[in-house]
Image 1: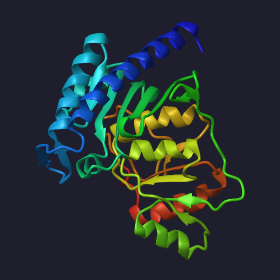
Image 2: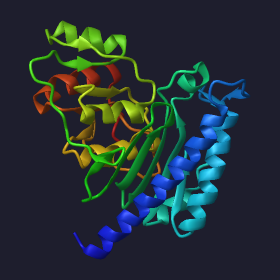
Image 3: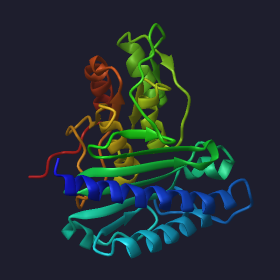
Length: 272
């Protein structure tokens, strides 16, 4: 990799990391307190903490990189991002329902996407004091220590999934342990790298901000994340939703998992 480009990615990662920590302080000030909340058009909840974190991140990140585009769950989509070489992809609070319940499994997910690929990413879970980070070619880290894919030896495969997926996997005779529910998709995906999970799945409909930060962290751990309909996900397209997703530490599970997800969620029809 070109050294100048690598330096740029490293600088971008430092910006994401410091911004995530600042955002985490703000989010934590609302956590486990009475806060205002609303229901969005897609029936998902949003809180005043989501909006405050989003506004803060926009101010910090765009001031530092005014030539970058912006895509966030809590901001109106400005399609001028499609003309940008690099964009910020932001989920101010991933796992809002967990945040509202007072559960500690929520995170702030930040990524930089270049030409459709995530090149830097941070996932920060303030309530768990865990900060995951990676940039392209620079390795992945958890709380400053190298994050290297961990394989659990001699133990059952752990897979968290919706009930319909469990039924599909059990019907084909796969032996495994039902994993814990981790509401933040970004956080759930990187647990394949830590060894907490062997597989992380997502139903059809996840959007760029749900997975971009995880994608680069997993990539730097030599773990793939795939859209079971089209393969490796591409980001910063006009359509930011993805098909069902699978990430796994054991690639031999891929045929079974991909088939199960396609059977349940299907694939978008190709446009003529």
